[in-house]
Amino acid sequence: MANTPSAKKAARKIARRTVVNGARRSRMRTYLRKVEEALASGSQDDARAALKAAEPEIMRAAQKGVLHKNTASRKVSRLAARVKALSA
Image (cartoon, rainbow, N blue to C red; front, side):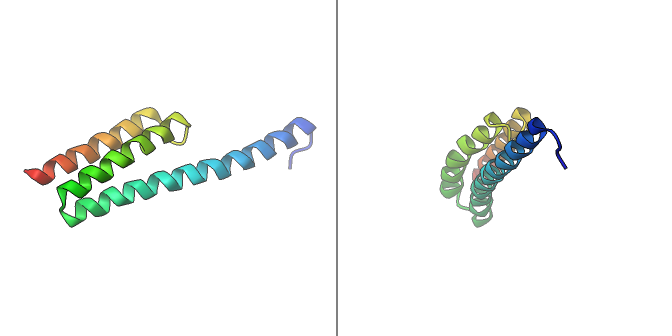
């Protein structure tokens, strides 16, 4: 348990940040799930629209520190490749 006032304050800050990051992560995963569902349905138009909505969310998560920048870029790249492959 935190003993010093600064450690107690740090613990409060971490708790608040954890809640915020959890919400951001959940929101991002929701958008990812929508892209996955669109890919599974086989509709390229739906998949393209879902990806267009998901990409800013993924990059926002990276910007806010929920994901690493390279991880976010990799996710977007792989999703885009899968959406592109639907037409082939």
